[in-house]
Length: 231
Image 1 (cartoon, rainbow, N blue to C red):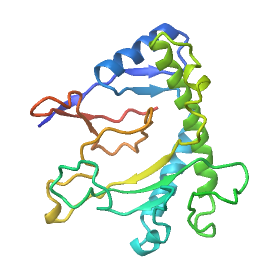
Image 2: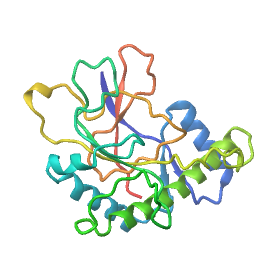
Image 3: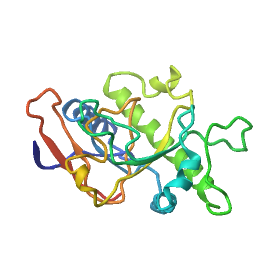
Image 4: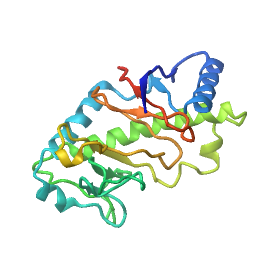
């Protein structure tokens, strides 16, 4: 069941009013589980570069992308239909394709599980992913501090217990098809799911399609559109 457009709260990560930011995060986490963030420190130019690299890769022929098929460390390319986030779906799999990238070290690591497109064709790929990973991780830590404070814990609680020390943070580039085959009518780019991990930072290029369900146990479920907000 589809609803209207949902107005999510906006949390300013640079707000001098810490109490208001903490209260806003707590309210958002309790009521919807989603919120926008502004002043997150990720520069517009970096986001544009990230989306440009992503677009360039997903435009490659499938056989070339499959050369970087996701490995046992869950790094690399996943083709359309390879994942089905909603096990109850009647379809073979979701329509999306994706590319997983883990932490990127300062030097080439001999046992780096990441897979990289050929440098001669993607000369800026690795540096772009490294910069974005660092910026997104910094923003994520600031959000975790607000969440900790909203739970009446110390701001650095999650960092102090080692919750962000295992380098499990992953960039996941996603591409959703525009037009679909008739046999896929009713299928989704990403079927209904809850994300794993502590938090997800979701950056979009403004293309609509994201929906959330605030009450998963409600029948029928109500899915509401989430509009894109610049910044």
